[in-house]
Amino acid sequence: MLGKLLKHELRATAHTMLPIFGVMLLVSALANVCARLMNGPGNTPVVLTIIFTLVVILFGVGLFAIGLVTVFIMVRRFRDNLLRDEGYIMHTLPVSVHAQIWSKVLVSSLWYAASSVIMVLSVLLVSWDVDTIMEIGNVAGRIIRAMTREDHVAEMIAEVLALLALGSLVTSLSFDAALSIGHAFAKNKMALSVLAFVGLLILGEVFTYYMASLAGDIGSLETFASLTFIKGWRVTCVAGAGLMLVMGGACYGITAFFLKRKLNLE
Amino acid sequence: MAVLTCRGLTKKFGSTVALDGVDITVEPGRIVGLLGPNGSGKTTLIKLTNGLLQPGAGEILIDGKKPGVETKRIVSYLPERSCLPDWMTAGELMGFYKDFYADFDRDAAAGMLSRLSIEEKQKIKHMSKGTREKVQLIMVMARRAGLYLLDEPIGGVDPAARDYILNTIISSYNPSASVIISTHLIADVEKVLDDVIFISCGKIMLAAPAEDIREQRGKSVDEVFREVFKC
Image 1: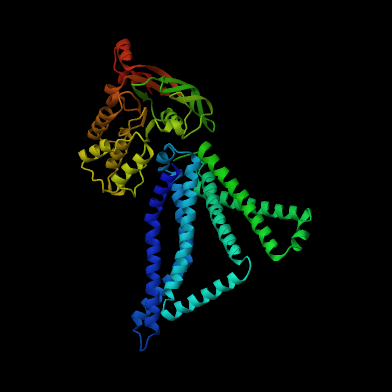
Image 2: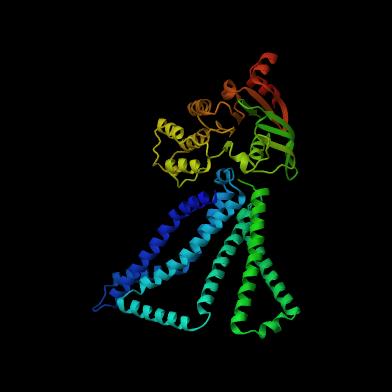
């Protein structure tokens, strides 16, 4: 059933996300054309200059906002689909609460990753000309060659990507947990959800600080300082992943508990 | 085996008692009217049966099982409010129900939509409130379920729509299944009911076959309701 939930979740979110991504790419292409026209020979009419400037500003705002918009849409989707009227349909489907949570978290993470890709594509598109792209290709080639010459660099990049994916899942779970807590109350659900999110962030920070202190108390910091770079990197990655797993697990447990035991549909 | 059994079912919201030691048994093949004034506990009982709420005390069993994934396979639920995803078309909605419910009869649903002249390509958000309610009812009644839970299916609709809704329920439900219709509009549903449950302030006031009530009291169920719940 998780597969079916994922299919419908993707379809439901794609009909909002794809047009946004499409508009972002279109604005990027327009910004590229505008920049070329403004930099071209001869005087550009004032009206066209204003329009070009607006398009470039729109591109800048879009690039800054696309990540936030994606988060906003995913948060609203979780709330509307599981905690408001649509919840009457979703929570009476013959699927477990766990499948419901996983479908939301996996699809949200996918769109977070997609918005990052769109940001990169937008930057490439706005700076598009043959010389620039050739230069980007040359730089990328040099980076790849340098990486393959150095030991562990490719693995380190894979580890960073894995940590980013895990971080994306945990972020999504923390939004879901906060919304589930806030919507268990009868009134001021969104305000209480924001409070719950702040509370979860503080708890996460306290936990991280406590674990770091604990590591210091048992002399782990001295051991850490004596490690080679790559071993230190690995320990940092494992510690980071461990912390994220604990926080993600806690947020998952909170979300599952509130959806199962404290559901309060409007 | 009873399709629905409640034993000492209690639910509180803070200090408010919504259900107070409710005992109910619903046998297969019966159409049951869950009748009571607003705020009597009808919706709470239906939500508990669907697993949307958890009981404070007591037990609720559907086909011998506690509410969960297994019972949701056999329960077809019509909420009291319209809750269809408005970005979907009627056709996509049928696909959604077919994906999750093995007992969903797509042809029956398509036939009912067609009789209402609702195009499968029409989006839910472009439908009127009344049409959305009918589409929701069609999705619920197109299932060959074991228990239909219909929460206020005729509340807030015009008399012509009431007739359509009641006809749809009677003509399309699985005859071996039970149907629980929650309402306070007794006169409209009385003719279709086999059994009647009166509920007030979270307590069962009366549970009996509709025919027995009419014979023993010499009055219609609607008249008895007005007597029992006289303000």
